[in-house]
Amino acid sequence: MENIVVTLENQIKTALDKFIATQNKELSKKFYINIERPKNSDHGDFATNIAFQVSKEYSVSPMQAAESISDYIDTSNLIERLEVTQPGFINLIINKQWIQSQVNQIREASFTFGDSNIGKDSKIQVEYVSVNPTGILHIGHARGAIIGNTISNVLSNNGFNVLDEYYLNDSGKQIDKFNQSVKIRYQQLFNINVDLPEDSYSGEDIIEIAKQIKDDHSDKFLDPNLDNELSSLAHNLIISKISHSLDQLDIRFDNWFSEKSLFNDGQFKKCLEEFEKQNLLINRDGAKWLQTTKLGEDKDNVILRSDATPTYFATDIAYHFDKFLIRKFHQVINVWGADHQGQIPRLNSALSALNIDTKNLKFILVQMVRFKKGEISEKLSKRLGTAIPLNDLVEEIGADACRFMFLYRSHDSQLEFDLDLATSQSSENPVYSVQYAHARTCSILENAKNLEMDLNPSNLSSLNSSFEISLIHKMLDLYDVIEVVIKNLEPHHLAHYSTDLASEFHAFYQHCRVISEDPKETELMNARLQLVDATRIVLKKCLNLMGISAPEKM
Image (cartoon, rainbow, N blue to C red):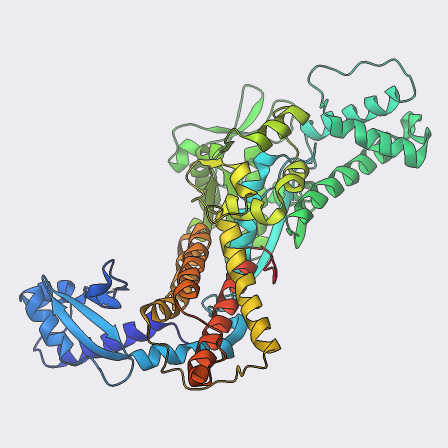
């Protein structure tokens, strides 16, 4: 099933080519044909501003260009008629029969509706969460996780070969500190008098890991010769807890990438050797520096500290070297916290020195979340203080509400999360409104089935009310919405589209009776049932892409 906007673009392009053929001058550049929905429906279903671009090329007014181009626009099928309006817009009115026919097109496409092959099997990696494995996930980690996962879902459905990856910082000082913290907590369980240093990890999750190790292995790891085995066990347990938290949000990674492998497999060494060849490394103050000033940055950056341990910047370089030059991803998307924004320019400079095209490296910078005061937020904060475990949030409001509310605002805007609203069963709660709309479609279809009403494709010409036509138009917008999500890496458009579609359906339901036992209305009822079924498909498609359940009853 073809995107209506793409079809219109092709028709306008054909008309433009015919117009150009009548002129004595070819265009000096290729024009982008923009098709959009007017804010005022009185101005047609779609509009294009192509005449403004063409008018400059041929030294005529936009109105003259619009009138000339419109003479070549095909109005025999998709486009029923058109209007040229000041100061030069071409407004397009879509053939109503064509619009009505799209109901069955949607039903035939089923859950492939909205999909395309825009990715053309391009190999793409989406890396998100990547929290240090030194403790459980907290609510602050949820937004990036859900945004990254939804982006991955959309890309996977549109022809991209996607790999979801969690980068494990499993080496370095923070891991040593984690291992030491678990060891001490384990020893304390056997009444061994050893104090936890001030800078240790002191959370309840560390104590729980120590207890689990004691329960499973008794006093085995009091033997200092088994410290490495104890550390490995603790590491696996915390990763298991992180994985379980993400699993509650229906997030599962294709790959958990070990930072250690960068050293074991030689990627880190290769990066240093390449920088050395380019005379970009210098020893200073006992440390090794990358001279990023030679690459256009304001200052140089430490690669190896004075104790020879690598910096986060150094391992970031090696990790991206592995992504692009070892595993050969065509494109990489990093979902980072907004506080990491300052690291991007120096990373891009270093990667460019390694002959990596940084145009293929995209960043989604996720702003912080604050929670609106209310009954649930007070309950959670009293339970465990400010660092609320992600598990507790999901347990309190549910995975669906959690996912939708974190998606609803643009990632570059700070989010005020209203926990009480997220659990309310009212039209003010957007996720409830969308899920309720889907459940309502299922209920209508179930009632029709019980009444043995026909749902086979039939004449749809009776779908003439403004509510019916508007609902069909809204469903057809899904292609455009998905294209915007992919182009801009902004999944919040999908959440907003879903609520708009739900609102259109609720309005249709309120004004158009779907089920009637009057035999005179059989054809109309059948057409409306098909419209309901198409709406069910599109609503479920959106919910699936967002990783949210589509309940059949509520």
